[in-house]
Image (spheres, rainbow, N blue to C red):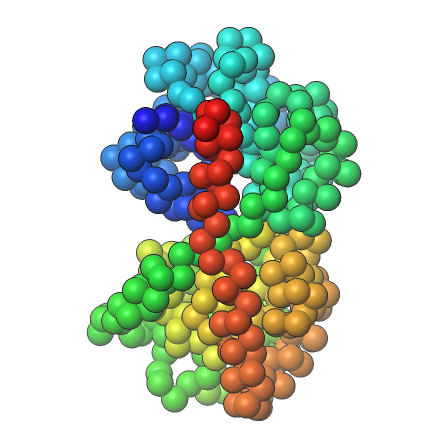
Amino acid sequence: MYKIIFFAKNVSGGADAFLRQLHSIDPKRFKKIFCFFRRDLHTRYGKDRVLLSENYPQKDTLDISQLLVFISNIQKTYSFIKSEQPHIILTCDIYSYLTVCFLKLLAFRKIPFIALINNNVYLIHKQRQNFFYSKLIFTIMRLFSRTPEVFVFVSRDLAKVTIEKISLKPRRMKIIYHSLDITEVRKLLKEKITKSQKKLIGDKKELKIFSVGRLDPQKDFETLFKAYAIIQKKYKNSKLVILGDGILRKELEGKALDLNIRSNIIFAGWQKNIYKYLKFADLVIFSSHYEGFPISILESMACGVPVIATDSPTGPREILDNGKYGFLVKVGDYQKIASIVTKLLKSKSLRSRYKNSSLTRIKMFNTQKQDYEKLFNGLVGD
């Protein structure tokens, strides 16, 4: 049996979906150990999980305390790798990537290393306030870009943007899309809503507009709220249901009050099985500033829900095939979002057409775990 260690600081959205894929890969051939730097992640992904540290850099700063935390975590990671002697190491965030790069060069050159890039690293750091910190991160990423045996990107556009903007020079790269196990999705769709959960989807007679994602700046819920303020004036029997939670919840609740739409918005929070809620949606909106390859769009399409998404630099356009299987809108254009929603809500036949489009397109993203199995087998010599 081959041993794979996965290191992560933060896991959400696409990275979470990747871990579910990884967890399902041939357990008789590959033993997976999930190694985290945060306690809230430590509770997931089966029995083979390890809380490596509860202390990691919280801010984009270069002060001595953050450096000491990083050094401490490098020491803990070194001890863990040395004791486990894995056949493959995987990372999916920049913090873990830099940690493993240091250690691979210093002590573990013979262990194959896969660096997964599942979000737009360039835009994440470019939009942060600390210019020098971001510049340093890009420089170190570039210097270490030949350390991993393979970079795996979750979309072609993401690979292009990351390599061009940060000037990475990977030894080898692969494109492996995030995907869903459609058979598993069908099982989850059959799960019934309990009486207490029914309040999260509103009344049967109401038109239901959904959105899925963390409540943080990247997802730009402010644009969504502005669009819904226009929509709600025409469709007073509508509800906006938000599946997700995050640091901006209180701020967004206040914004909804300011726009006089709070009574029509349901903050449903994070849900373990979002499919049993999404199946009630008339349409779903994604208003992000930027994405990697948003798994939430795939999850919505798997439920046969028409999709409206902002045309962020990577992700939505590739999933929706340039707008063939859903609607693409310029980032921040809340008036256009409102216009498309109005068009969809007016026409049941148009919603039906895009429902079928979603169900057709999702077949392209049925489970890709065989691609990872092939990659792992190649790295261990089989």
